Length: 60
Image 1 (cartoon, helix red, strand yellow):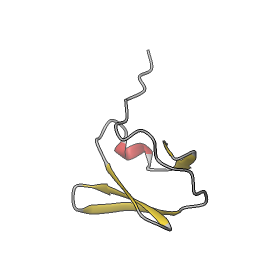
Image 2: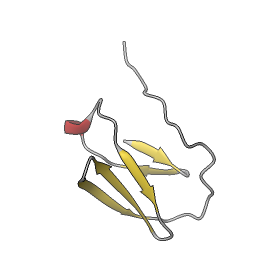
Image 3: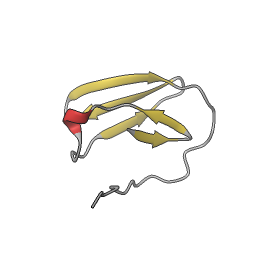
């Protein structure tokens, strides 16, 4: 799960630990792994994106 502009995007457990690209468009978020589009999510809020670099959350 990834949080973008206050909205949770499900990416999938099989992609855990991978670096993905999230394209931010006017009405949708597109999650890409290389050239492959993993998911498309409707954008439900108009909050601005304030941070452009994500950090990995690790579990011990």
